[in-house]
Structures are given as structure tokens and as C-alpha cells.
Length: 586
Image 1 (cartoon, rainbow, N blue to C red):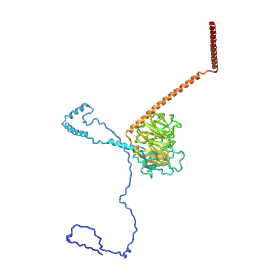
Image 2: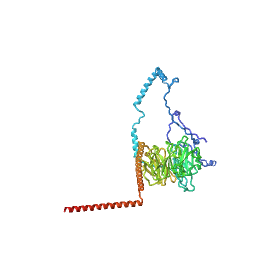
Image 3: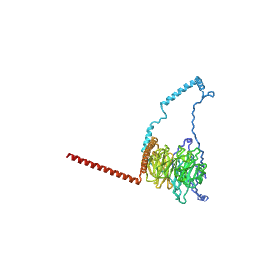
Image 4: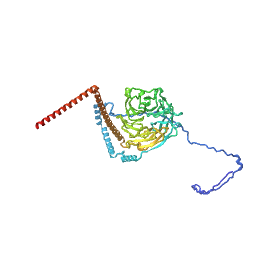
């Protein structure tokens, strides 16, 4: 069947532009369904098929070796001389200068360049294109805004121990490049109270993903301490509960690359490991409650490269050694390090001393409990912070008898603390009641600037991000809480460095005066006691025997009796003379 529809148009209308308009639809043909043809067809089952109009892609990661850059300077003193002129000979250079100055081209070039240079100098002196107007007003306004803002902190993420048996987050370490990862070491520090089935794993968390750790570290014993290598962000060093030292390479998975031999390791839990400043970036040292400080090279961990016993008598007797729980090393002082002990002493040491006895330089005493945190001020390494018992104290290397500054005694026990890396006057402490305290001694000395209740269980560790904005706290039940503090607490204030240094020096002078006065009082007391002892000795030497005492008493008695008799005789004679004179008058 052929359907034809004819359009009729006049010939004169051909070639004209079309004029479209709306009109009702016209029905030209209606074909009814044929029931006989329905038997020739059948309905197909519907099926949904997904199509992706894009090419398949694969993701690959390549980590290239770090480029070591070095800055070099060149002092350009002499140059541009011809080969036949020796710049060291004054006569040669003078002769060449006179020759060039007589050249006509040289004179023309100098006159032409002089005109251009004069124009540029005048233009620069007219206006400074780099000048920023109202800069001081903007800075003052920002400082006033920060000063008015109340110190605050908010929780931005919480990382929980994924195991059923909860463990303490005993150590925290930020990723050195970018600070977008946080390594958390988990262990049970209660001696012989570890539950059955307790996992030994520690984790590396991405701060943007709290649901699943990025990498699981699988040590042979729970990690008490864990530290990223500042030179190679893929390397981590860990100290175990059984005393062994191990290191991991995140590119090779969660198994340790190498471990120290058990017979050459610590005998107690390794409470602190620190990377040393070296060319290879493979040197580190560790300390433990067994009273030893061991130096390691991760390229060969069969045995330590060096050993120090913290014996205060300097006899290297391990039985008398001080038990260490904290360690401090400042890269600007490569030969010095400090150890915090359970006895409340800070031991200052010198690694480059010739004999082991000379390595222990001095001790600082003042705490009544274990020193859980020990760190030098990042801006003034001469002053260092200690956290122990119920106080946090700031010390000066020059004064050993007492600290220069101290917080008030708290009701809860302090477990850890650290300095702010961006502000010299701010430090952080965590306590057993689950509270984080932020101290700014330029603002307040007696009370913390900010006190925040983080959780109900005890907080055992704290670490600040390198930019000072994020604060990580580890709890007793394995929860790592990430806090973001307000800008006023991590923004350097005007003249803050100078004011902090002035306060440190002022408190140091005050303590020196008090120490000198106390030394003077002790000297006077000692001299007084010595004098009393001498008098007692003299009295003891001058004592007489009983016979001598009796003889001396008898002698004194008879002398008194004779004196009384003589006195009586004189009185009798005077009375007789008086009577005789009266009789003569009559």
C-alpha cells in the first residue's frame, strides 16, 4: 500500500522563505491494528545494561628519589680581562684601562649608557612601585582582631583503635612532608596485665579518613614509641615493649625491614626513640627504663654502635643506673642530649666526651615523679620544658638547683607535654582526667590560657603539627583525637620572640640571685655549725677529773672561809678602836 499526499502550491510562490506557524494537527491516515499479524511477534524480556562512555584507566604511583639541593655562592672579584692581561698585576690592569678609556667607542658607550642610567635612577627615586600603603595599619588591625578572639579549640576527627581489646595510644608522630598522616603506636603499659588476644599492630592514619587506617604496622611486640624519619618520610623507627628496635619502610608494606638482636637490645620497654642529625639520615638513639642509652644505625642493626649507662656515680654500674622514660635531642646542638628519669632527675649528657664517665655532665632535680616529657624550646634551645608529677616546669641550662618557671600544682597527674613549634611562649600538656591545657605564659602565668575536656579516660600522649594548627592527643583506650586550635594560639604576635626571651632572662637572673642568697645562707649555717663543734671540742678537752674537781672545790671553800675570818677580824678591830675613841672624849 502506498500512501501519497500531494502539496499544491502556485509557481509564483516557489523560492519564497518558509513561514512556519502553529496550527491544529491534521489526520491524514489512520491504520487500524491487524489481529492476524499479532501471532508473528513475541515480547522480549527487558534488561538493564550500564554503559560507560569513557576509556578504562589504571592508576600507578611512582616515588622518585629525593633530590638533594645545595646552595652555593660565588664571590666575583675580578673578571672580563683578556687572556694577555694578568689581573693580579696592577701595571697590566692600569695599562689596559688607559688603553680602553682612550677608545672612541668606549666614550660613546659610556655617554649613551649614562643617559639611560640617569633616567632610570630618577624614575626609581620618584616612586616606589613595591611600596605597600597602610601596611602598619593592617598589621595592627589583624593583631587587635586576634587579641580580641577568645582562645578555642574544636575536634575535627577521632581515630579509634579498630581492635576489640583496646590499648593505650602511647606514641604519636606526624608525617614530616605535608603533615597529612599520623602514625600511632599502641601498647599496654600496665605490667603483666595485658589481656589475652591483644593485638600488637600499630597504624598510620590519613587525617581525612578515620574509617580505616592507611597502613598497618606489624611488630613482634607492642610499640611503645614510634617516630618518622625527618629526612625520609617513608621510614619509621619503633621501640618495642620487649626492648627491641625495628624500622619500617612504608613502600615495602607493614612488616619490619630489620630488627635489633634481642641479646643486644634494651632489657625493658623502649620509651623513646629519636632520629639524629647525620649525612646519611640513618642514625638514631633510644632509651629505656633499663638505664641505658643506645645508638643505632638502621643499615646494620645487629648491635648498637654506642652505649651509655646512666649511672650517676659514673662507674657504669647498670644496677645503680637511673631508669629513663624520656629523651631529648636538638639538631642545633649535635653533641648534647638530655634524659628524663623515673627518679625525677634530668641528666644532661655530652656524646663526644672522651670517656663514658665524662658523658654525664650534670643533673637537674626538682620533680617528685617520673619525667614523662622533656623538650627544648624550638626558638631558645637554652631553655627546656619538663612534664612530671602535677606540674610542668621550664628550666635554664645555667641553673641546676631549681626551675625558672613552673605551673601551679594540678589536681590531676600530668602525662605528657610539648612546645608549640611556631610560638616561643606556648606549650601544651595533657592530664589523666582527659583534659588538654594550653599555656601562654606571656598572657597568663598561674592558669592555662585554654583548658579543654577531650574525653573521659586519661590522655597519655600529645603531639603538635609542624604549622602549629592541629593538635593530636592519644588516650588510654587507644583513641587519637585531632584538635584544631584558634588562630590566636598558632599565630606569632608582634615582638613575641623578644618578650619571651626577656622573660626567660629575667627569671634566670632572679633564680641566680635566689640561688646565691641560698648558697650564702648555707655557708653561714655551715660556719656556725663548725664553730659550735669547735667549742664543744674545746669544752671536752678542758674537762677535769672528779678528784681535781673535789680538790678545786675544797680550795675555793677554804679561801672563802679565810676571807670571811679576815673580814670579821677587821670589823672587831674597828669596834674596839671606836670604843677607845669614845672613852677618851668622856
